[in-house]
Length: 266
Image (cartoon, rainbow, N blue to C red; front, side, top):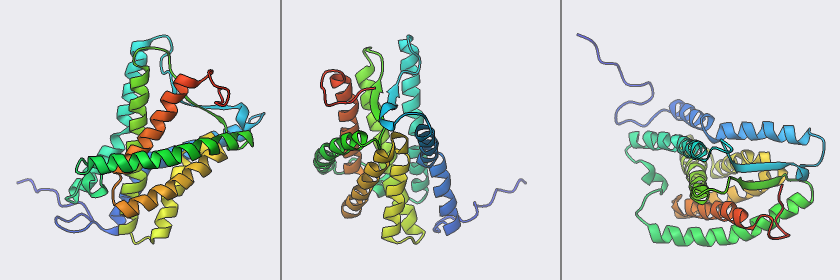
């Protein structure tokens, strides 16, 4: 008779996973998602600062065409990229379900939709106005590249894809960099301040491709988001806030680029 495989080391049924298992799991999740994005952003930043000319004379494009001149193929690539970028969130949900909780443990569910929407909208209103001012100042001082939120062709699916891209960014970042990472660091015995620093620095790191301003601004946003998560115990409002910020940036740029003098373009 064939013997059944034994339980995975450190994950006995009904037992709490070992510290080593949780550490390795966290490293792998980050290596498959925003940790890898942080390394990529660092390499991109090194390339920008070693390139002749100032940072503000270079552009960082966020949503660009994947198949210029072929709109249906372009749409397929856009949807493929958005969907596959959310796989790490599904992986996190899987790990949390093995603990018997799921994403509900992070406050990412539909149990409190109206409070989440209200809080998220309020946070977006405050951060959005200060964020624009900070970006313009950082770019003016030469600390930031010119950020081009979108460079998609003028086709019927342009705005829906920009909205989906914003939702994907917000879900991926808030679930992993705030909810999941803080939960795992708490379980690993990190102090609240050390966990706050790790989360906020990670958030800043994968925005480094935008320049020093992108790193500092997003790290400050990370501090605020961690403090709000600790207070509310939910990533739901943070996903709402981040979604509104990115939708405003992506769609706003598409509507205003070249029509207002204060908005830098590539």
